[in-house]
Image (tube, rainbow, N blue to C red; front, top):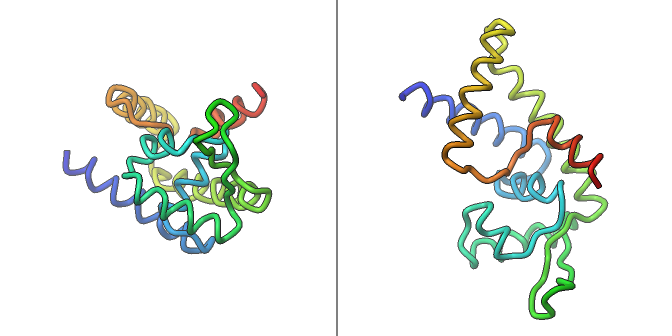
Amino acid sequence: MAALVRSSFLVDAVYAASAREYGLTQQQGQLLCVLMGRSYGMSELGATLGLAKSSLTGLVDRTERNGLVRREPDPRDTRAVRVALTAHGAKLADEFYAETCRRIDELPSGLSAEERDTLAELLGRVVFDNEVPVVFQEPDEGAAAEHAD
């Protein structure tokens, strides 16, 4: 179990370094990655990111001031808003996502292809069994989502 905890610190450090290089906080990076697939309502976004309403509002406010996201009316609920990427935010999200994937893909470089596949399968089961929200998609999931639209 210690290795699993330590590996989370390792991935977190890579994610933080990548975010810093793109002028983002880790939470802004997570927000951009979540919004890559579609816009979200504030409640749904808070649940996905695991943030309280006040924390989420502050995060969206700061990211909106940086021109990366925008609030738009929810067509199904006139009292609600949805958060979506701006064109600049989408471009930055794509670059940040690709670079972060590249860096994380290097972490198990000392493993054989078979060991990497086994590691991915086992971690995937842990994530699925614990119903972890999709904050960072597998690269092939993102491509599948783009082609589904």
